[in-house]
Length: 182
Ligand SMILES: NC(=O)c1ccc[n+]([C@@H]2O[C@H](COP(=O)([O-])OP(=O)(O)OC[C@H]3O[C@@H](n4cnc5c(N)ncnc54)[C@H](OP(=O)(O)O)[C@@H]3O)[C@@H](O)[C@H]2O)c1
Image (cartoon, rainbow, N blue to C red):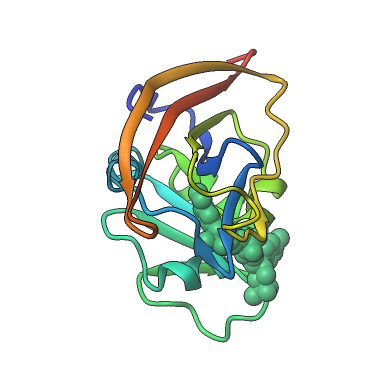
């Protein structure tokens, strides 16, 4: 995050989900492609570590530039270019904490990864979609974490954008959830 301390690595989920059902993906693709959201994603994660599951990596297709890319998978045969591959979460987290402790750790998905790592912060683009109900935009991946224990602060309200997948206008709030003890 922008107010990063040099001495404590922060663990942050960064996610875009539909407000109504917390949908995040279908058939290993994103539900929305929002240029302003992608820009914020780039700004926040630049220079930090991005940790992702194998399916999210495959969906992106390559390492994200200007970040340390960490992928977890038990089945990938070889380490993808410009990524560090781990066979389990524990080894990945140890490496991130010990080798790159001055950088923040962004968990960038997907569903399976989010649910295994309890973050100190969640940066969520909460999308209000008036055009597509869950029924007409099929969804098979959801943001799985209970955010009830966090405080909630809206960083940007009612951001207007055009979803490049459906070419329809959507509105979203960019929200920070933070741990009460931080
Ligand atoms: N809207 C958003 O912000 C957002 C962000 C990211 C992703 N997504 C969407 O989320 C969906 C993908 O989510 P997903 O839950 O299906 O997949 P995922 O979390 O991206 O990847 C799951 C895979 O990661 C590996 N993995 C997970 N936990 C592991 C562990 N403890 N140790 C070793 N490997 C582990 C496994 O790979 P192996 O099978 O190889 O072992 C597992 O099959 C897609 O639709 C994507 O577009 C949305």
